[in-house]
Image (cartoon, rainbow, N blue to C red; front, side):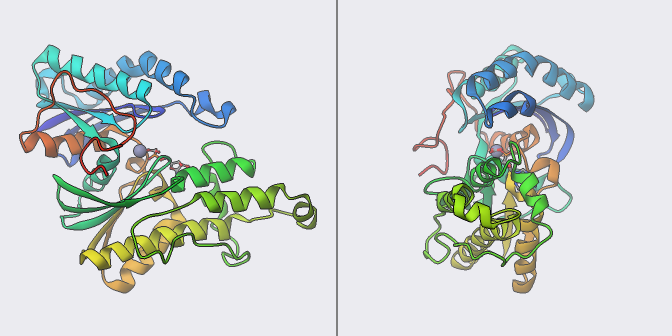
Length: 339
Ligand code: KG4
Ligand code: ZN
């Protein structure tokens, strides 16, 4: 079963062809970082215009690299939401038109849940039941997956996403945008306990997260003149800061595993590319004798291969989306797993 996936929820335009939900025949990603960098964040209007400009080319490359024409495809999947509405509409409508014109089955996919499917694009794929943490620039969601079609949201952030906290802090510290990866690199060396930082909600006993306080800690320390003048280097150095984020994510993940009795865990989304987080979680998983699955680095950040993989599960289960399917910007009760 060969499925074409299309992703355009934020600032990456991507198309991919995936066979049997596992084997990536092609995955083309056109990033827009250079267009948004000078604004220090993604500008929605620029993002949607850029998607329109490049989507034809991205699609053509994905089909060419996969060595298939439209007649070699068994279906089309596209991100329905959540994301930037103007961006979503470009990929979703392109996918609908492509599928309709060629008589192919079509399904809309939840972007956040699809991040979990990135872990299946590997020789070693997690079999349900498992607990999955999707940690990205826009989301920090904890799921229990009992079947590829049974994805239950356990909890999420009450304010900022972990990636948003990393990006905004990195920006304050002059590391550019998106700065999560730069911050993570700087956190590789140094003393993680040099500055005591809070671990927000780490012992709250539920599955919710909060990261805005950590971002504020960076901001207030950085902008307090008395503190700045005393410090020769960084007022809050990256190792303690990134360790605080990783500690909270790991604690919540293992707490959810304990509560649900899951022996397999998945971390996915852009922040799962963090070396610090990977190390922290794999150490703990090993100690507890649990199986950890993390997507390949290229499939941690936004890509259409994960959309094709999630679409494969839906199409296999007989799900089809109507041609009137609309995009949705936030979960707000829409899409599976929403709460
Ligand atoms: O999944 P993604 O590509 O987009 C969203 O759906 O949001 O995630 C992007 C996020 C950004 O916050 C970025 O800073 C972060 O992933 N990120 C990282 C690393 N690479 C990307 N964070 C920490 N360490 C990294 N190596
Ligand atoms: Zn994402």
